[in-house]
Length: 54
Image 1 (cartoon, rainbow, N blue to C red):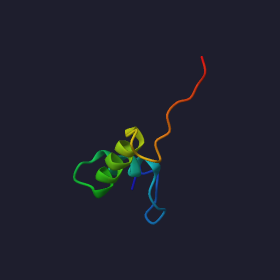
Image 2: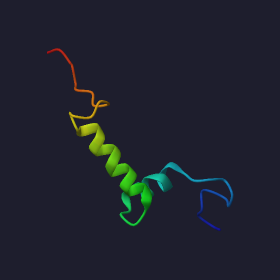
Image 3: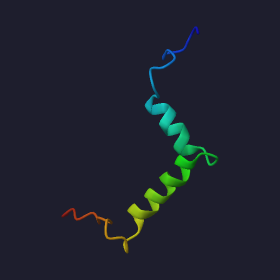
Image 4: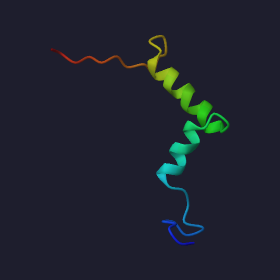
């Protein structure tokens, strides 16, 4: 098709993945929200606080 940057079968672009994570009707959206919550939760063992010295 004219204007398509990807031919059929070439896989998904980074923009496709971003669109999935921004669409509340897509399971990737909930995964993205869960990941964000985990990163911002100081009670999560994977939480890393910014230790920059001023």
